[in-house]
Length: 121
Image 1 (tube, rainbow, N blue to C red):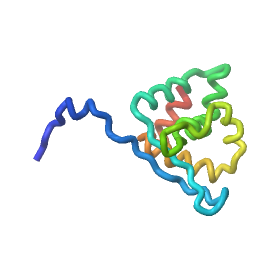
Image 2: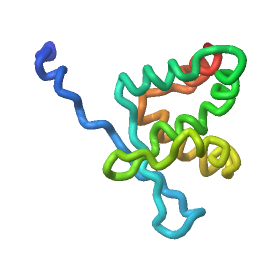
Image 3: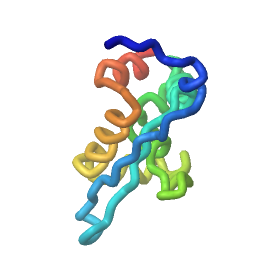
């Protein structure tokens, strides 16, 4: 049976999904909590990536690293990283970062095409 959503219900935010991503490279049981984005957070993230030259082009080249910064938060929702950590994240092993990025993409509803489009715009 089809039921149209009550607009009042839609105005109450759903819990943001989160997932602990295992990073055994840093020790047994070590995880990185990865949170999905709200619609507004995703819009702001995409806007921060727009542009084709200058400092914005550098940000686009670091889209994975910046996604890690945007989505990795403590259990209380406090960011684990800042934009000052982008270079250090970029120096980390690709397989470790990609594991975190894949979770961030999935939890935020990003497809590979979305990331590519964001990087191109």
